[in-house]
Image (cartoon, rainbow, N blue to C red; front, side, top):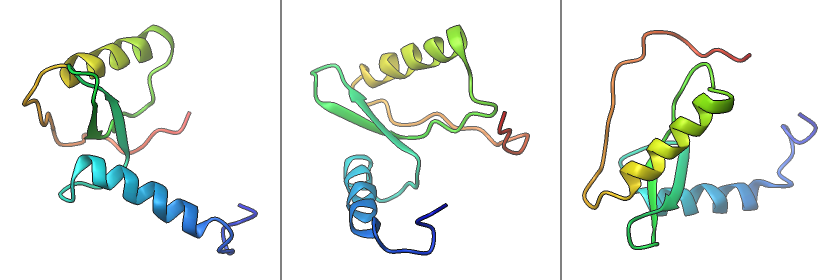
Length: 89
């Protein structure tokens, strides 16, 4: 909150955002994650969009699933309509 009205980190923030978009492509938004793919090269995805955020074993299962789909050449997208708003627990 201290920097909300300042431009102190604007250059770094814009560069970080652009780096993510360059990895995932221009047709998506944020958040973006990049993980190792089948050949070790980074594979980037839009997401995850999950609410509430999983914890513990559920978070580990989600991470394992992310790595699994990243290992499949040609995997691009899974999506469904949101049925609830954000939960910030």
